[in-house]
Image (cartoon, rainbow, N blue to C red; front, side):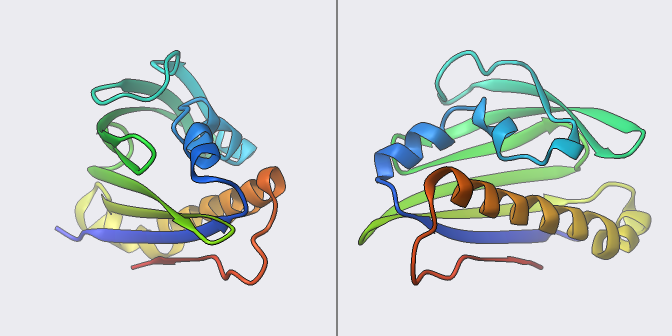
Length: 163
């Protein structure tokens, strides 16, 4: 079993509470997901985030293919972090931790995702040129979209890494 990791860090010139308000609203995931992904929330996003919340989406990771994705919010510490885990969907494992930390002049957001690709050796083969590439594009889009929405944090280098 090969486990992959995506790590991302970004700062925004807004308060921690403003960042939490935006990121903890499940409906905003659609805002920060590229349009070509066909992301649509089917159910479960009608309330602010809470532990045990089940959210169901449709996503089109590749042209001509759509899949349901069901996540559960497994941990929430108000204003600090939350964790979502895939229950059903395109990955064998998806465990996504979101952290917020107040910094001088704004907030630093950190994402840590551990994931496993299905289909054994075939999944490992497509990981570098298909899955990794797509996740890279999604997180680059999010980085740019959050800057568009909230402004750039001068002097801060946002970064992400997939291993």
